[in-house]
Length: 623
Image 1 (cartoon, rainbow, N blue to C red):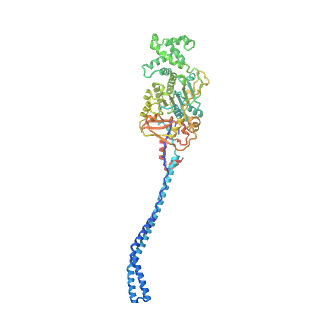
Image 2: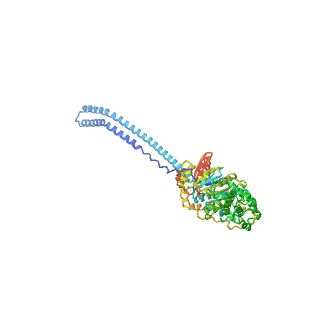
Image 3: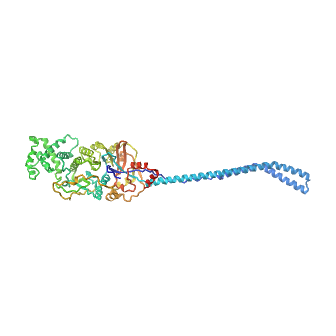
């Protein structure tokens, strides 16, 4: 199922074979027609009988009269001459009336035989019609059984991957539970092919918790930093050039300021570059803040000399960096601001630890640290990783996948740098925004080839913007599982447990393998169903789900509907050469455990079925 160069965002509910409906009804019995023909023949005989009654009366009278004359002649009442004349007359009468009666009988008998032949032909025709109806019903029944079997046996869930060439996915809206599902589905698929996954979690909701469970079962030994508590064990800027480090720190300082202000970041960058040049390659954040205090004329520099943060020579050089104008108001103001923000990073890398190589890194923020502190720390991590991505050796597309959740908390220029770095190096990037702020809307689906997924939107304005972005289209199908399962799971409330808090300290000069790129993708077949079903709440929630057909409903893309999306539902859309493609995707990772989950994408499966002969298609459906 999983391809190494693709990102799988969820599952699509679709039916190749439609419900055939009720079985064909039994054919109506053919009404016998023979009785009607016999009745018609009897009626005609009765009419003939009534028509010939006068002749029969005359003939009968003639016969009786002849018998009477004969009897009278025998008894001697009449003479034989006279009796003979009477008998001749009676014979003439009988001849005149008998001939038509005989002909009438012959004609009646002929009509009866014709009617009988017609009735027999009608009976044979009815039998043929009855047999044809029975055969047609049997054929219809077999066809219905074939369609019903294909309908019952078909898979209904198909994986959805970003199309080739897409290097970024923007996910907008959603609950923390929905984000947990999406991160687990996308991240587990990447780990399954041996890719590296980094999660910068600014959501303060532990949305990568289930992904950590999957990675642990795979034996990947994930590394988790919870900031600011783990700052002493984190140094994402280790080994960066002074220019890159100055760039990182100047952006960190801007984290608490409004984007688009009049201040030029290059001025802060210039101050930091000069300080780093003075401090040399062993510059640490405490040494940088000590030098900034000298420029800002804050405190007594002798305290920093006693703590060993600065030497006398470094103190003198920093104090003279800007010559006699070092006391200029602008320099003092910016040095003061730089020192105030960078003090939050003074514990950075104070306790370097020995960390094993790992394919999964999670760097999260502790919600108890405060909004501004977390924003500063998030900016530091995002900017530092931007430089690490730029300096990493080339790799395959999506071999390193970076998730940034709560990305709306970072400034637009920080996001732009990260997007550019990932696009240039083939690093896959997933940006997850809780809301559509002004700077998010400017970048949604732009800057590179990006796909967009809309989850449940929090307010009417965000829903309106999302509906405009998606555009009009046919209704989308929402399966019963999508409607029911997500609502039964609550947002994650527990935070992360740090895995580096008790790591063994290492001496100076040792490299940190945790940030060293691993070799190419390890051999792996797929995301194991057992790992999803046992390591995630999503998989456990679907255990025992019957394999029967799912009921579904239609969803029309409009603001009100987007505000009522199920937690794991995502309207996934992207533009390609053949136009815009819009799907309703379920990000629930537990769907992989269902017996109706397929290993191919829907379009790929359709192409394969069209290329197969009909008999093989039926066998495939039964499988």
